[in-house]
Image (cartoon, rainbow, N blue to C red; front, top):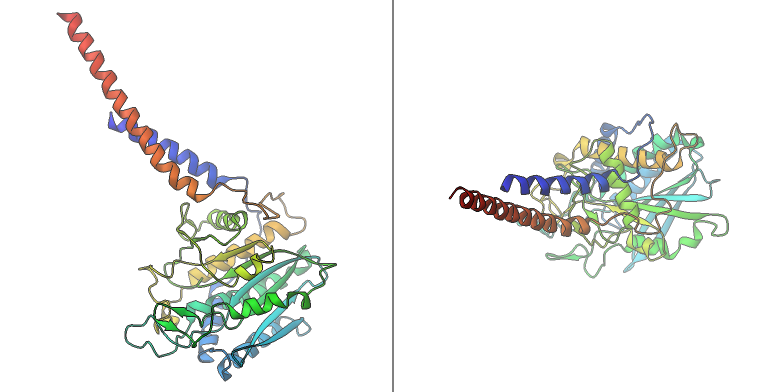
Length: 377
């Protein structure tokens, strides 16, 4: 019977998905304070400053904005302005540190430059991109996370870096360059090239780097970015799912390689994860590199989902004296979890098994009917 085969298919599929989804990860119980409305205001603040194109006064205003926001948190908070040049254009990354006395470092990063040209815009391709989602959303979450995590810094067993990258988004896409002859991720590569200047390699070490890129738009749904360290990105997905964000962190996400600011850190053997959406073929968010990447397409819920998931992840792994013992995938060096590709390939196999079961069921039933008929003759 077809119903039997279908039942077997979905039963086996559900078992595998539940097994992979539940894994060994269980979020610790802790009050979460990340505020999506505050993050939304941070996005709006950045857009009010103008277009954050590298080397412009608006870009400098944005860097000053971040400094002022962190000084509001703690006027004595350490920050470093990392100056560099791209084709003679002056750029700057900004690094802020919390808990400098801790040995283990977690890096949270986002880029703040907005694209100089809307190269995917069918009507206004020479106009600049507002960059509400592509840039400002990740930075807004970092600012709000800094305020939230600072309140609990004494209870955290890690040092946290908040890094705002310049010169990420000016490379060449199918419509052309943001700025002629610029490459992608110029700022993060310059930062990693000078990484030894920012910490003491004899006393400190990096646990992981988490990048937030295009994390505040409507219809948020993260992909599994394939440069990301599998054990880290999959832990973040499971943390999000357990918070109830199953649509944003799907069981079977799209998988794709995205060259982004995390890759330079990966090349230094630091575990990395890039929380990013499908921006190339996404009817829920079709505004990539267009003039429509503006505040009207930013979602407070999306900002809250992303920020709350990172907040929970930090508490899971670094909160002292948590009520429960948390077992995650730390130290995230290996690909500990079952790959989503395994799920993708397993589904057709299960479907084939269900078809075979159905086929043999019908054969068996027909054989029994023939025997019954023969015995009655």
